Image 1 (spheres, helix red, strand yellow):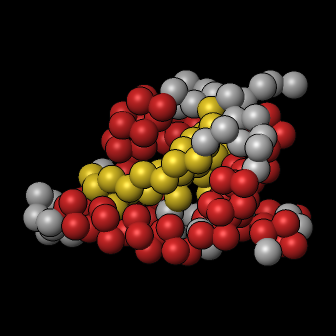
Image 2: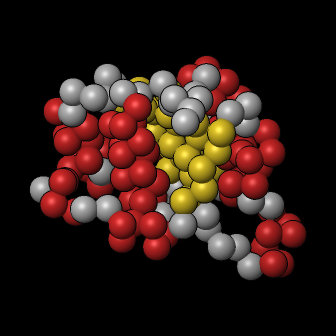
Length: 157
């Protein structure tokens, strides 16, 4: 079985985000892995590029930290997980994920969620998970939203 020393988990704020977090921490625990959670503010959708990006990043990081607090606290206490970091960056999702987060962290495993885009939207914008599978230089695990049910919630209380 592959040994994963560094795990990058792409967060998207969607319905699979919690499943991605839990799966990343579970695999990290089993492999004594470092974990980097990354969230990208897609400024290509807004006319905010270059305007207040640092404030947007800091606000989103704080909100994500609050939303994921119980997982982050538990992971800090887990002796099998050497480190967990949460980063938020503005830009094009695919560019930031591949060229900033993944390139600088050099993970052995990337974990992301599936969003289930309609055929029309997929044809127009593509899929982040598909892009990661095609371009990441490591294993990629795509988590489905129903995967959240197979994790023992009492571990995070």
